[in-house]
Picture 1: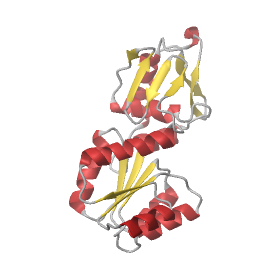
Picture 2: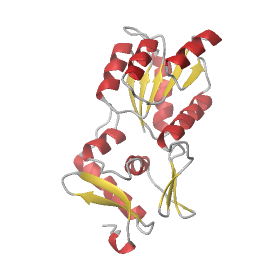
Picture 3: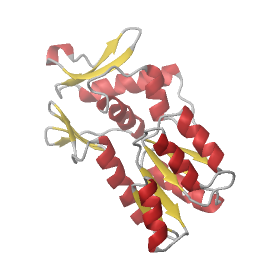
Picture 4: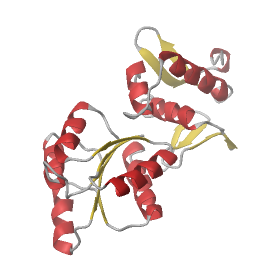
Amino acid sequence: MRILLAEDDPSIAEGICASLRHGGHAVDHVAAGNLADAALRDHAYDLLVLDLGLPAIDGSEVLRRLRSRGTGMPVLVVTARDGLPERIRVLDLGADDYLVKPFALAEFEARVRALLRRASSRGKPELVLGRLRLDLPGHRAWIDQNPLELTAREFGLLEALALRADRITSRTQLVEALCDWDQELTDNGLDIAIHRLRRKLHGSGTGVRTIRGLGYLLEEMAEAGNDPA
């Protein structure tokens, strides 16, 4: 998953970014509201972690603008502002959850998993494609009952394809899903990741098909057509 963090406290931002990246997510960080608003307009994210007390544009205004564009992206507000009236105001603006600083990272991570689970699998705890089963927030996959051992990059690739299982996913979309602003993924690196994922999916009844000139499609297929090479 790709997450945008809008937080102006460097120490808090560093801890949150480390936690999210350790969980296998790509994370972009901005420290001002106007930068958050621009990033949300220019990039596709799966979750926004939003501080309210941002410079340039307040976090509440970032949230209002996001919802005014009709975007249903989940938003987790993390703020030092406490009190029931403030929580009600922010939830009414369109936030999905609200966490008061200081907070335990374990609770933050649990709330992130819950929001991503609801958003990515439409309330279902898992996605199932043939004999392949995925727990997206938990970053786990199985073929039948057998765990599928994947690297963080391989799981991110499978996740990006699984969320668009009925549509073609372009190379650009895959790169954007796998990398944050501080990372790069070469064409060769993407090809290697796709090759390795295909080999690990061999025997699952689900494979990655290349649609020449357009991208890739995750689909159920006959074993004879699921060539790991």
